[in-house]
Length: 230
Image (spheres, rainbow, N blue to C red):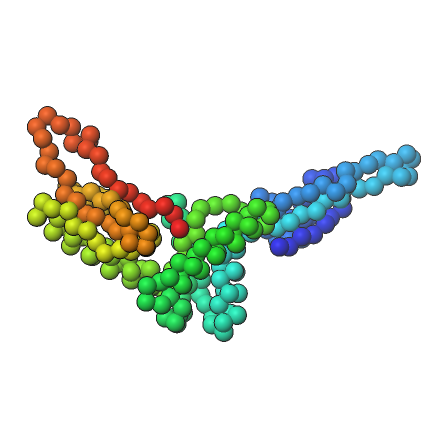
C-alpha cells in the first residue's frame, strides 16, 4: 500500500499533486484531509491544506502481485493473467505446477479460499477495490478438468434422456458440481440436482417429463443450478 502527503493552497490542488506523486488515477486514490487551508491575519498564522493519499489497487492488479509473490517464495516463476468473466474474476497462473495441484485439486481449492479471504481483508482495510469472487487456475488444471467434466456430463445427459431414468454421478467437490450444472443448464429435456451430504454429495442428471398438451413449456421448472461459490 503506497501513501503520500501533499500541501497546497487548496484541498483540490493537493489532491491533484497526489495524483502525480502516486501515478494512478484519482478514482484509485483514497484521500484523507489532514488539515484544511487556513488564512492568516496579514499573512501570518495561516497554513496550506495537507492531504494524504493512499493508492487503492484494482482487484486484478492485487491478485496478480499476490500470486507472483507467493510462487516466488517457493522458487517458481509465475505468469499471472486476470480477466473478468460474468460474476467472477478468473485468474490463470502459468508454469510447471503439477506438484501443486495434486490429483484432485484440493490444494488449488485451498489456495483459492486463502486468496479470497486475504482479498476480503485487504478490501476491508481500503487497500484494494471491491469486486467479485476470485477463481484461480494453475497450470491449466481447472481448464482440463472443466473439459473432462463437461464431456462426461453430456454423455450422461444423453444416457438419461435415452433411458428415461435418472443417472447419478460420482461424489465431487462443489466447484466440480457447479461445472456440471452449468454444462447442462441449456441441455433440452434434462435437469440436474445436487443430492447427499458432503463429502458424498453428487449431481444427479434427470430426464424431464415429456411435455403435456396444453402445458406452457416456459412453465417447466429446471431443478438444480450453480453450487454455492467457493
